[in-house]
Length: 465
Image (cartoon, rainbow, N blue to C red; front, side, top):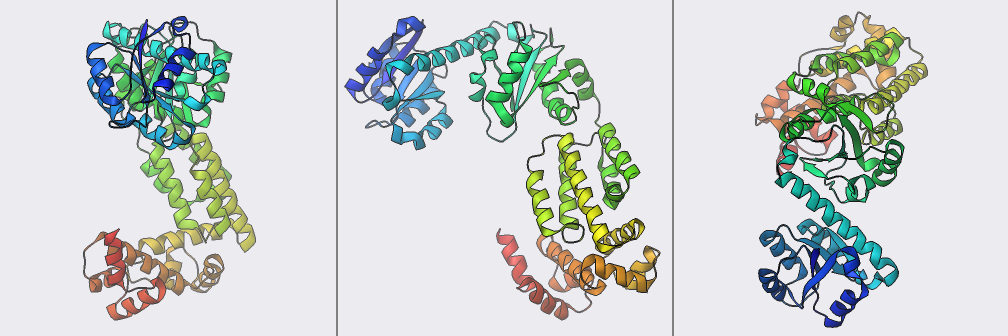
C-alpha cells in the first residue's frame, strides 16, 4: 500500500479531500493529516509516508518551506501541491523545489478525482520499481536489449512530460545526465509508441531506439550515450521514427577521435558551393562524411550571416535566415538552410548581372580586405590579388557592395578597431595603427562620426557589460 499524508490548514478542506476519493481502490491509505508544516514534520518523524499532499498557503511554515524540508529530510517522499485556481504562479516554484505534481482544489470533482489519483499512483509505482531495480543491483547491468532514449531539445527539460507516455507505465525510467532512458522490458509496440512519442512529446524532445544494450554495464551505457548520441542523432539520415541506433556502433565512436571539420568549413568560406552545383555536392557530401560537431556547423552558418548580410543577403533575407537557424536541430535541417543561403546568393548574382566567376572574385576580394584591413592595402593591391584590372574591379565592387572600395575598407577597419577596443587593453593610438589608420586623431574623429562615441567611450561601455 502507498501511504499518504494530507497537509492543509483548513480542516474542512482536508476532510473533504480525504472523503472524496476511494483511496483503497488505488492501493493508497491515508495514514495521517496535519494543519500546518510543523505538525506535518512532527507526524513524519513518527509515521512512514510515500506521498504528501501539501497546501502552499498555510500560516507559519509555508508549503514551499515544507516541501523543501521534506525533500532534504525524506527524499523518498513525493510531494503533491494542493492549490487554488489563483495560485498557478506558485506552482512552478513548488515544482522547482521538488514537487512532482499539483492538484487544483477548486477543480477537483468526483468525475475527475479518480483519474488524477490514478496518475499519481502510477508515477509512484514507476519510480519505486526503478528504485527497487537499481537497489537490488540488477540495474547495474542492462537486462533489456532495447531502450528508448529521450533527449530534451530546450534547456530545463525534465521528466514530467515523459510520465505521460504509456511506454513508461510498464517499464522503469532511468535518469542520466541531460537525458532519460526507458529499458523496454516488455514487447516494443512500434506503431503505437511512435505515434505517442510524436503527439505527446512533440518537437520539444528527440527520441531514439537504442539496440544492443543487453548485459552492458549501466554506468558504461550512460558514458557512451552521453558522448555520442547527440552527435549520432544530428547526422542520422534514416527514415525511421524514432531514430534507430546501435549501441555497439556508438561504443566504437566513443573510443575514436571524431574527425575535425574546421579545415573543411574554413575552406567552404570561399562560398564556391553557393553558385556551383558540383562544389555544392562536394561540400555537403564532405560534411556528411567527416561529420563536424554540431557546434561547428552552427558557428559556420552564423558566420555566413554575419559576413554576407548586405552583400549577398538583403535585410529581410538575413532576418528570415537568422530566425529559421534557431530551429535547426540536425544536419538535414542545416543543409536545407544552407540551400536557402545559396539561393539568395544566386539571386543576388542575377540581379547584379555579373558572371559567376566575377562574383567569386568579388567574394575573394571582400575576404582578403577583411583579413588585411589593418595593413596598408589599397584598391590596386586587392585587384592584383584577385587578378582583375583596377578599373574593372572598382566598377564591379561598387555594384556588389553598394559603396566605393574606400568606404567599404574604412568600414572594415572600424569594425576591426571595435574588436580590438573590447578584446585588448592596448592604447587608443596603438589600436588606430593596428586598424590601418596612420593618424590616431583622424581615427578618433572618424570613429565618433560613424559609431556615435569616442573610442575610449566605446571601450568603457563595452567593459561594463
